[in-house]
Length: 213
Image 1 (cartoon, helix red, strand yellow):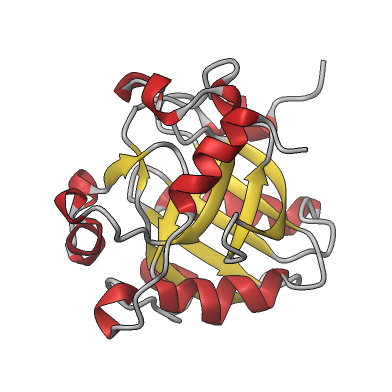
Image 2 (cartoon, helix red, strand yellow):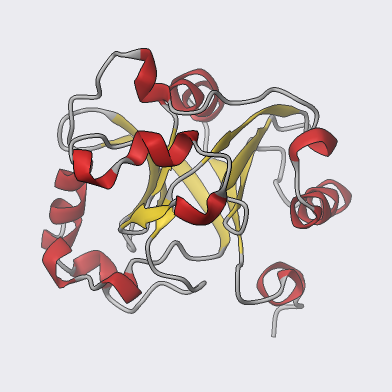
């Protein structure tokens, strides 16, 4: 049985996604990583390749600082890149028990997209719509952009070139519809994959490269 907090958050994802082309937000890019990636993305991508950390699985790199996601196949070839919407709060660690809280009890400062390495898999929200579960216990997922609250201006936020207005969600990663259905869903169907969410406050070494202790 789903926990109450999970049901609250899943209900927020429960929407009838519009079929207008506007719902895609800014189109994703299929350029080579060097053309679109930040230095931090390049560093983590090289590390993944050198260490085979993705274990032969498809993977995503979410760059919070630049509000971007890049998708790669199991061999590390880039599938595409897209802008993202992220949690309103700044930080790299999910608040304790956030997945059990109703939305009304999650204050702006706790609406964090956490940094880290996550084993992710496709799932469904309460309406049977596909989402990518990043951290089920923390109610963290990646899904097509939510457009049911016009006041949030989520499509407009995705369409701007600046990352400064891309912080709006309760922590989940919102992506353009086209990127989700053409890139993420095919890549993760029938398999798990890895999602690397880069930190904005901590260092890459602290989050990913530190030796286990």
